[in-house]
Length: 330
Image (cartoon, rainbow, N blue to C red; front, side, top):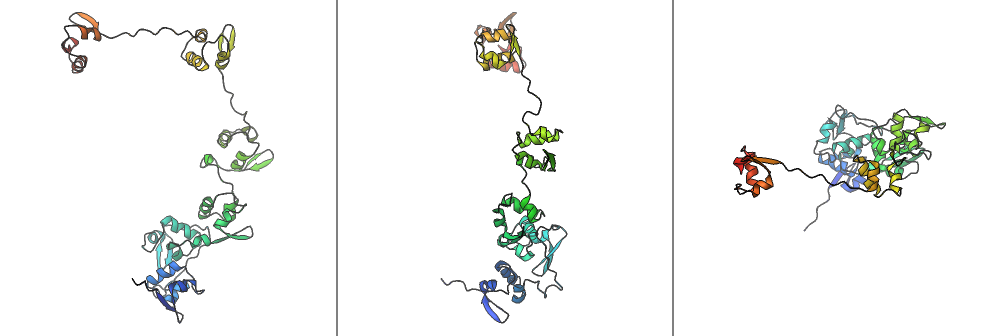
């Protein structure tokens, strides 16, 4: 079976296949963008230069946005393939190979509209300048000056933060997200954010407990100590002229039951001395309901054994649910 013939394109007086033109220094767009522009009917030289098609729109305006700049997802018009549309229309265009969110993210990263539309991974090659260095996003995420993960770094850049702010800001603990404002808090002669104080070696409590105490107005120096807060009240029980808690009574030689059994007995209302002795009161006899028929009163079991009862228990109960008297039911 014969193979497919490579598409040859003529531009600038030369004829090359599409892959060769994509590697040519005069090509200003990616391979996918070049292919899509040629499919859209743009002449080869215009497609290679990366400008809009002058035959389809006069005075085309190419939008160039710096990294992290916010875009208007409704009213902003974006030009690609010689057309200008709002972002929502470009997202539903058949030539768009990414989702609406992916398209918005790529535009925030400074990509041109045509590059953002195609399913290319070239945004991984974008280099960001910070602290006098220039690196890709993957390289920055491995840098010791980066305090967050690579997905967090990407989200921060897409939200409009500068690269240095995105790299240097402390991550917010999961239990504090959306709950506590990360203001600068003074304590011990220092100024730190809430997340930094939660990780400070002088903090003896969890991040959640620290946030709760600070919201309640407790000073930072007191909030980080484990002893801060309301003391736990322990109930004491008096017996034999002594007062002890449940744990102490369970260790006493006069206690004949386990700590759990003692606690259950006391919480059930039993007197302390009786609970310690291991005495079990006899169960109270269960009183069976009485039913009247033929001038007599008996339990259900006694009536079922009576020769005047001609049906079984389920039939009796069903008849009574239907409104019959007990005498009629049996």
